Image (cartoon, rainbow, N blue to C red; front, top):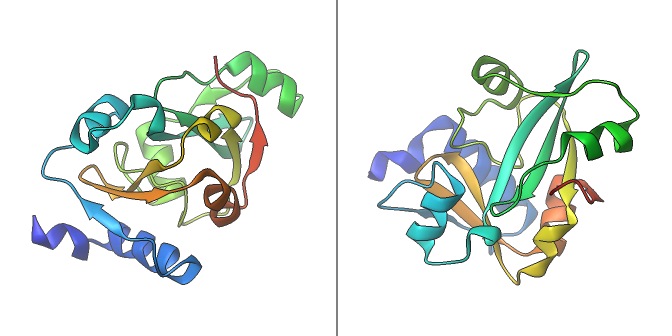
Length: 160
């Protein structure tokens, strides 16, 4: 487990969060955080306090939606907000190619390609929220205001 923190995707997240705020740290879990429910069980917190980083595509454009673990991303809301006709979840290869992370460890930051980020306002319910940090067993804790700043994301109501 100790070598987890030396994996390239985790190092990339660690560098990004440390440069943003040296008080932010990666937490290594003994159990998986591959799903929001797994992460909440591992961290002993509400499922909604887990940030799901989901990659979507519209035409040939990719973007990330950050959604509370107890919510679903609304494709209809995304279509209206972005004024597009069709939007779909990216597949595993597209996730890896655009973010540099594998599904289950997609961080909301430190992507290998520049991606627009939409942040669901429902995450603001929590004092602290947790995001994947490049590996299914690694997360970091952050508050909502810092999440907006570190991601340069746009707040929207995109969940149902």
